[in-house]
Length: 452
Image 1 (tube, helix red, strand yellow):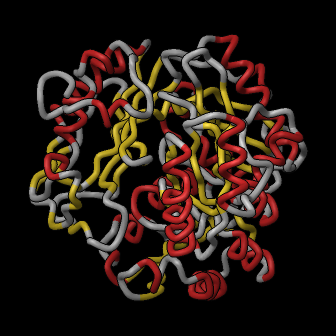
Image 2: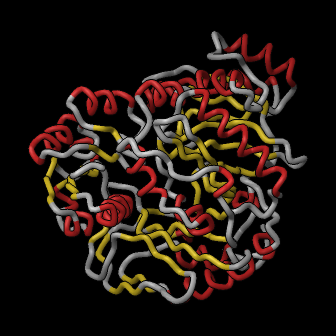
């Protein structure tokens, strides 16, 4: 086992990693920007190093400063968390070249699965079902038009290096293709410095279902069931639950088996997530793989009784996974609400500032992952996530009941948050009935009683 781990991240995930390390008897080093000097991850780590000014690009996104902090403090490994450098293959290489274990998959896996065209090709070879589309990068708009005419509309253009909905355009007819191609091309070039696009058949009203996998360095790979991530705004997840209300045991087994096959195909190591689109007929299609721990990992922990961060650290240290697929059992239902510092009534406008009052809910089945506290000042430079509220119950109804109670108990004052949004969402008739897909929030006005 490692003796000391540096956490190359901030906020709630940095604190989550520190807690896992403490339980494993591993010392921790926090890095932080000048804006995060008073953050809890800095307070609770064994050591802390300031790596630069407030902006992420001047601190958390500076690999050389993180490596320097690792060298100064004498760590064995670096945990990237999620976001920032978590899926940066060059950073993984830099860690290895300086003698630090990168807690995650190898750099070549990150490169392969981070390139959407290569990832799709790799998954096809592993027998994973994929959405019909281009074999790789489109060579021209004309090639895209010919393929779209053959497959039929609607289609979707996606940036090869895309993420967060950028470089993505839905095209409903041949007349719309040229202008959308140019817009997606320009956006991809501007956002990712890579204008390459590929094209897929657009699946109408899909659900977003992802499978959690865990793999060690000895060839052992298991899946830990699915998570439902269909409640989204602009391709950003707002609420997740596990298991999905529409996935039965047969479908779960099928999706899990292909996810494991995909992970084995690339010799995966650590925690990863294979994301699928599920259509109305229960056909599922590979979308992408996230080669890191996910924001929504707690719902899987709650239903499977596993600590995914501790598993992730153990396998990075070379230990065998220690359990097999037959040992994974799903117990009850869990829901996670992402509580962001945003004014949801004003188009989810970010609302940084000082928290003047902060009270976390408790009671049976309630968990809060947060780095916030009373008088904490939410900086304007980073993601607006303040807390993750996770509720677990014997079934979905009990999990929803506990979430209702917990949302009412949760007090955050001084800044606007998405607490009221979630209270509206989980009491909406269609959400209660699990009758939703990725377009649910686009069609639903939660400011009013019913749907718009």
